[in-house]
Amino acid sequence: MNLERITIIHMEPPHTTDVNVELQWLGAVLGLFNERDKDSSCFRIFISLVRAAHMQQVLSSDTIAFHCGLSRGTVVHHLRKLQDAGLVMGDKAGYRLVKKSMHDSIDQLEQNLHAMIKLMRAVAKNIDAKL
Image 1 (tube, rainbow, N blue to C red):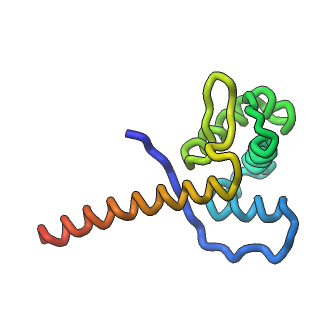
Image 2 (spheres, rainbow, N blue to C red):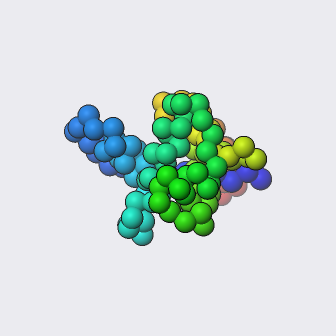
């Protein structure tokens, strides 16, 4: 069973054109960045992967660690979190966004959510019929 953890937090979008603020908001809405991440390490990793995607690059965990000034263990922990959210994939070559752009990533997330809601409705209907 492929487990994909999706968290959506309702937050008003920022009123700015600063791409870093917009990326921070997007990650926060997806539940990727929390208060325990005091040094914004997950955000920094996320930004590295977004920039690499625009340059069509795949990054190793060591490369990400070097560029972000983090330990490899910290990077791997956050990469797993991003993989669990369905945003990042990894293989022998390294890590990259599942889709080539943030827009395409959100489109994929939307498709996944619609499919999950469809399954939830079917189970809910089955439960209602049995009660």
